[in-house]
Image 1 (cartoon, rainbow, N blue to C red):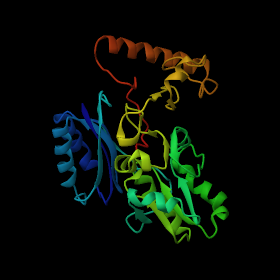
Image 2: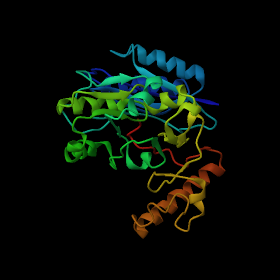
Image 3: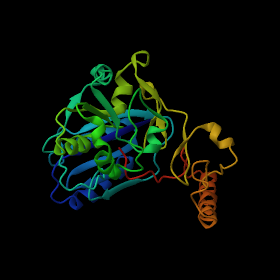
Length: 310
């Protein structure tokens, strides 16, 4: 059993490059795999390992500049969710592309999971899912608005085009672990929206804390690791990943004629060329050979989850 740690923290790192190699070395020495992103604005990532190694990593990050109170959430995975450890330098730890957005200046009102249902069921509240379209497709809260964005970068434009819909409404937003809402609430406040709320700890904390019988969540929550999705109680969901388009699939989707493992699915078969598919077939051949050698065992066949790992 592996312990999975999803974490983020906004803080000022004047020289994130100086933190990169020591952090990577520490993770390697403690048997931790996954991806951590470093930027001037902080740290974000999902990693996995044995419980004692993850606990040592938490203490290590707490010792980093300004990270004493960083956010993290723990869950478990039966199989190893990642193969290797990557520590990457980025311009943003979650990419919104809005240089004036600063979560360290101000954010919306945090709402504990136990209070979330009452808020989103209020008639004067509009609930907005800030995640990507493929994430929303497998699960969301009852009554939530799907912006149908392919990436978080598209959210500001979507808001500009749709803001008139929310006149005289309080806005409640949510995301997987909370990090995207740190930026989206700051963005809306900068646009003059006064009553902005976001789910503290994100969907993961809600699914951990709120009993299923009391839940207003429908479906599964996409996660950026080999489990692909989780459900109430953070138990592993049924989804697999299409490694051509990195969208989640149900097991039944593997029976559709468009599905070819590692090459295409019904969602992306028409989006790639035959040259692309041939490249994917060669990659899948190498993956199969590696698995036959016992190099890895993952529900997800390749370790290339997106950098938007929140």
